[in-house]
Length: 424
Image 1 (cartoon, rainbow, N blue to C red):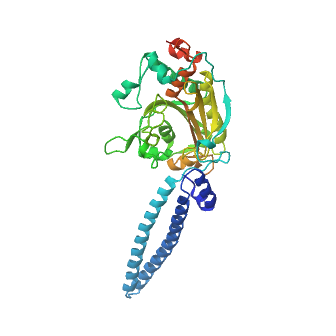
Image 2 (image 1 turned 45 degrees about the vertical axis):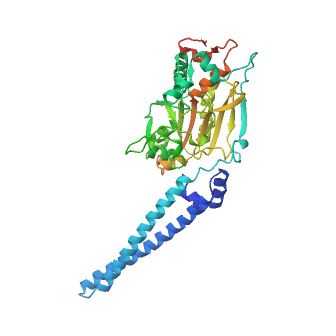
Image 3 (image 1 turned 120 degrees about the vertical axis):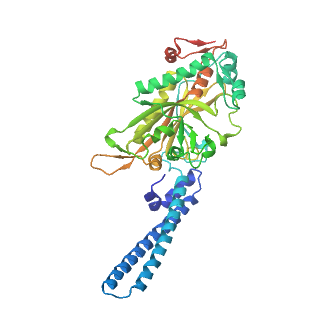
């Protein structure tokens, strides 16, 4: 959510930046019109209340003097009616303003490349060399079933398309990756581990920006309460402090959590239909920071480095990409995507998005901080995958495959695999 002061004082700039995000700039004009109407109504309301108070004072004087105050009483009744109607009008305006504010995306940081989509993304650096093979490398959707560790057909039988069953060492590899990532982030990077609920309410999804705009991508549970399966642990972690004022001396706060993630992927029909890249259910280790304003871009570099460290230890080549204005999520002011090399697909594919949302989510969720003796101000929130577990498993299978069809386990992961060094 954007600051109302910013929307009032820099409407033209906000309009241009909203357009660069691929959102409707007319939303800014609509907000300005509603805000002007609200302020005019507030001025009129204050005038009417003063007139009512003056008329009430006169009634008291007239009655003390034994006079007839019927005209003044009628005037007070008329003013009360106008005040009631104006209060109702203000309530309607406030509702419309809130709806528009929830539709507006965050504004991009000055360093973000401007462009309509991923074609304008900027590659910042490449890390590691893609492996070379003296055989034709397989994609994971062939390699996994041949090894007997991935079963797409039974996943579809049990549930439907884009669900998968993991067998044996495939299931163990997934579990090992979760433990490896959590141990790394809590043991070396200073995160506090959290095990949140896997079901959240609508307020939590509104706080991080999934609602109301992206409701079709969520799995909503049936029942009287508006409960949803978590699309990412970013949602419960960011809402841990919803409605709170944090002590600025305690910042930054860093949380890490494993959750399964559930996404309907309503807007991605026909994309990545093979394999594990785009599933309706997948595992992820999420990293969330609460940072003091003025320190969040330093925190973004740290967060990105923590996600990169996972890839480095797993000996996976990757690149870091700054997303363009048209390719970022609506809550982000700046996003780095980490894209891992997948030789079976001869392409880099996203495995983590690390974003600074500045105060956008904190305004929606009401999370503030206060320095000693200072006024409360909204914190900055950051989030990133550390990493998407299924996609990491894909990257290991494809990058560490051997000529005999086996897969070598990266050395850093072997302790979490009970010493197993190969899947064959």
